[in-house]
Length: 59
Image (cartoon, rainbow, N blue to C red):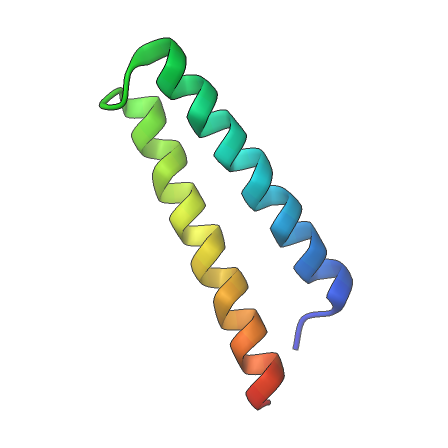
């Protein structure tokens, strides 16, 4: 089980990635490879965070 500190770090990472994705989209457009990279990373971190929360509650 991950600690609350690790969960908070994942939340911070997720927010950072979201901001980077939005800025990249403003600068390069929605279909730019960098935007798509950030989008995949947001999805990955979000899934990891949700899995961590689920397993800590069901654990």
